[in-house]
Amino acid sequence: MTYYIYRFILLNIMLSMSYIANAEPFFDWTNNNIQLLHGNDFKLGDKTRSLLTFEHVNGWRYGENFLFIEFINRDDSSTEIYGEFYPRLSWSKISGQTPALAFIKDFSLVGGYNAGNLPKSDPYKAYLLGAGISFNVPRMDFFTLDIQAFKADNIRTTGIQITPVWSVPFQVGSLHFLFKGYAEWQSEKATGGSSTLLTQPQLLLDVGQLLDQSNKFYAGIEYHYWHNKFGIKGLTEKVPQAMIMLNF
Image (cartoon, rainbow, N blue to C red; front, side, top):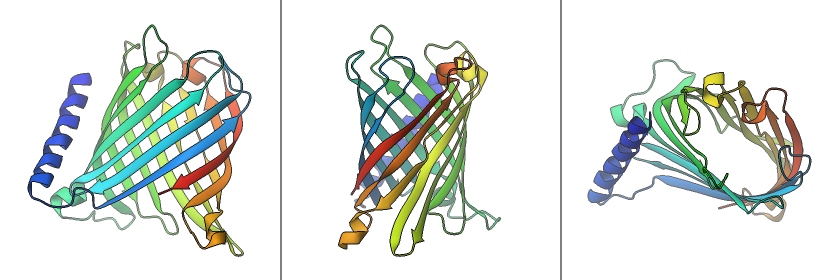
């Protein structure tokens, strides 16, 4: 599993270098944001935590890349650092064709690498490889569904991860809102225990829009829900978190 992930990431790098060699702009588009969150009643360890997250996404000639890195302030241990990287190759960009079904925007081959600095004795690492579908959904910025094989270093078996991701802008009167997030289901073989469901939907008010700086500064809440956390049957987190987000 790890071998194929490395090969896939290497393929992305080779295609990227070829793109640069042709003297074209590397990214067709990019977007970044910094999120600050604070919540209580986390399970296993420090109950109250503050998180600083950096997210980056870009599109280029043959696909897209997404990554995030989060820094978690914990009193029960050193600062936790965790990140995920997902390179994606686009079928429509590579082939120059579009899917025959109108409600499907694109297909993709997607890999993933997850890593953290804890536990200190055996830092967490996991590898993913699979396929993605991007849908055309009215009034949504995007809606994607990834189905991937999942292998963590500390788990003997390879399982499945299914991840829908969405973003929906909407208005209430003159106020602009954004409803975004993801859900992540992992099978028993992926966790080495019980199947899990992690979801973090966010409801955000475009505060910048009130100051004629639309899509720059948001404030709102994130609801963190993790059923069978770490594959531990019956251990469920339900944590609403205050959130602000700077988009650039």
